[in-house]
Amino acid sequence: MFKRLRGYFSSDLSIDLGTANTLIYVRGKGIVLNEPSVVAIQDEPTRGGKVIVAVGAEAKSMVGRTPGHINAVRPMKDGVIADFTFT
Image 1 (cartoon, rainbow, N blue to C red):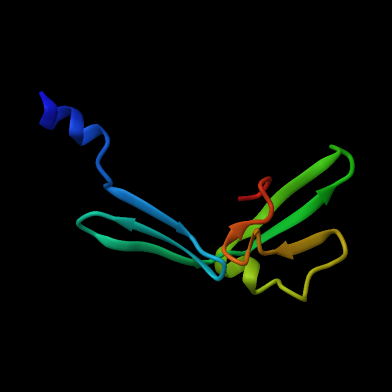
Image 2 (cartoon, one colour):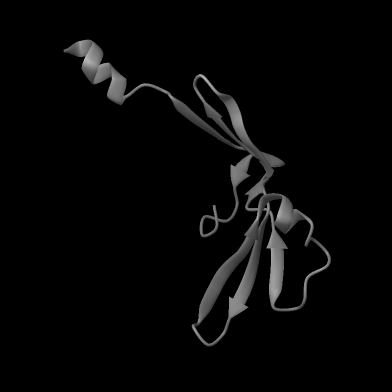
């Protein structure tokens, strides 16, 4: 019974929220995702909030080239979560 219970708490999936890149590791498959830790956010004044429009490499390509209503941000700063809303 212990072996069966242990399976529920095993580490088959690992997520590394890094300052530069976010990695996802799956046991038996290795790293299945390696993307920049960047999120592009669009202001939605009609809804009174914000919407995620791109993540990872697509969002990184938008850094410095977005219109005024879209911001490309890095939610991780100095190894800690700096923006809990979009992390």
